[in-house]
Image 1 (tube, rainbow, N blue to C red):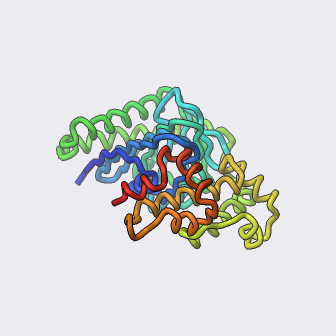
Image 2 (image 1 turned 90 degrees about the vertical axis):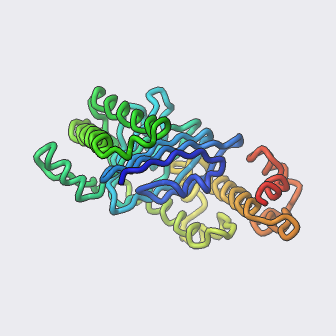
Image 3 (image 1 turned 60 degrees about the horizontal axis):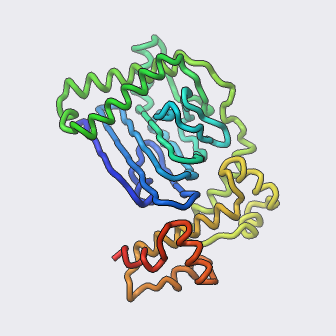
Length: 315
């Protein structure tokens, strides 16, 4: 049965748990009050979601093999974002490869729209609408559909998200949800078939293998602070090599990325801690911050509150 979810988040860790069709790990890269809006609509076959985040971030997204997704900027005047080090602008469509993983990097407020179908449903839709089976590309593609087609897709996507906010019960009406799903599917397929390949497919496997190995090491011990020297030794690469790849995909040095990761890890532990049983000092040192005073200052600059305030709020 079709359904919808509309949520507002102030915690990026909680927010990333609500993504569909991909596993997402998100690191906010600048200070400020973080707010994320998420509108998610599940039709019979089509899944779609619309998200907006108030602060710049780097996110590693691993697409599920059992879904065929498309991604585009939901705001026509939005600044471009980087996907695997390649720029995605308004008016373009990202067509990820099945099971592919890459980093998304934003420079400010970001408004994203996504849609996905199961591979069999995607192939069937292509067969019905175009006379041929369609499939996920072997390499992630950056496409530019005809302007009118993408505008139609954007308008339909926004209209569905607006209904999820103002009239969620409408999704319970079979004919309404069916008509909406059909229109969205047709608009998506039209954009994928009538397109211009921008020649920016993410085919640089040798280049992406380094950043992928970097993330694999981080994932292996998610609650443990890591350091560049240890990682370079484990990967068998030089600091310069790792730095160049991180700059391309993450927009920052590995030192900065790992520091941000440790700060967010500390925040997560403070949120889950119990005052009187857990102390800021224990968490800070456990995350690799030896100087409590410097940690407290940096924490306040990044999250706009003292570590002790986060600990109290987590009660």
